Length: 230
Image (cartoon, rainbow, N blue to C red; front, side, top):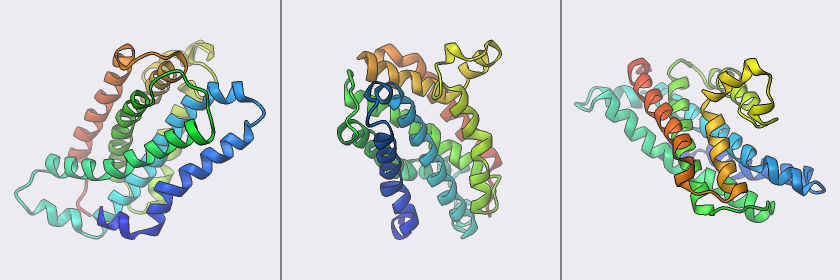
């Protein structure tokens, strides 16, 4: 966490990059309010996952390369406990990042919404936990920051194309619909869209949140078995 606070690039990634991107989106759709309202939940979900993944992946890689992780492993603390500690640390910054994206989109970009902003944030928190664990998992296979970024086309891009961001899952070709249903981002977009556009509550999207939570736990378990010390 101290490394992130001292690193201006990380702070810029947390605070400035999401706001700049969402401002560009809002400007691009300034004359198409209905379209902006419709795609806003998907864009919020995508940028939350993307920025969380990059922030966590690069930061965790630095912890490995600087030997911090190796020093922790010589203590009596288990691997799982170490990763949970990192999860909680990264989650603070990632949650703040997702909150900025949500509030900026709703109140500055001025997207129309029906649901409770607090419940929208809960959905993003669950997505953020998944994104943090995905970043930790990917960084275990990377040896430098560029390799972390190279995982985006493999782990993030397919979810963007198939999760209902560009078009509803129901309108995708039939051979893509079943794979789309198993993607975590699909469930995040659907949950946020139901709350944001239809005014539903967390109780109505509990199954979507359950899928996201299951993926998050599974990724953390796999990362605990694959992470390298350096």
